[in-house]
Structure formats: C-alpha cells, structure tokens
Image (cartoon, rainbow, N blue to C red; front, side):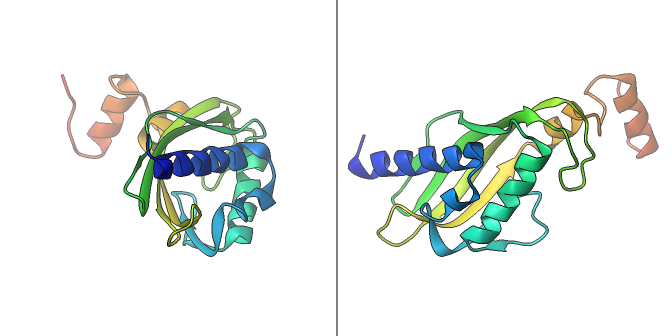
Length: 162
C-alpha cells in the first residue's frame, strides 16, 4: 500500500467517524473551507463544512443510532477517491421526504470525492446510495416478486410478470 493510499484511508476513516460521531464540527478538519457536497437528500449542493455539519445533524435527528461503515477497498489516483460504505440505523423521524418508519435500515453507497490539491482534505464529495433497496426496506416500494410489485407494475403500464 502506498503512502498516498494510507493517507486516503486515514482521511476516509475519519470521514466515516464524523458521520457516526455526532460532532458536526468534525467535518471542518477533513474538508476544504469551501467543500462542495451532495447526496440524494440534498435538494442542491451544500457549500462549506458548516452546511455539511447541519446536514449531518438532520441525519442524526432522524436516525439517532446512525453509523457509517466501510464495505470494501477504497480506490484513489491521488486526486479522486471512491469509498464504498453503508449507512446503518433506525429511522425514528422524517428524513427528507421519507416519513418516520421505526425500521432499521442498511443503505449501501459510495462516497466519490476529489481531494484538495496536494492535501489529504476533501474538496468535493458526492454520495451515491442504493435508493431502491432503501425504499423497499422502509416500505415505500413493494419487494421484488411480491403481489404488490406486480400491482405497481400493472398500474404503471408495464404489465404483469409471470
């Protein structure tokens, strides 16, 4: 493992700890001053570590036991990084458009980031999540192969699968 990979792994370990640690200020030491962040729950990109910290507080309010875990090898070329992860927690309150469900959810995803020039700090981050599986888990969509799925497909005009 190269020295650059070790730095990136340390950075992403701290990034995941910040999402799990309930300290909104923890993002400031990991990010460039004008970090650009977006995920499926941000209607527009967030600018700055303070905005990112406020976004994290909304997650923690909705999922008090939320934590982010590493799920695979991180890839980097020294400028960009892809870090697979999963978010786990019990949804106790509304989270964006999703009403409180009381269900434990596991959301698989990837953080894709750009590092600040020559520094192990994040300049841009975009989070991608498996929203379909999450919607099934929280009950917004029917599970694959169920009567509910067939009914939904029929209503949408896709017909019924055999």
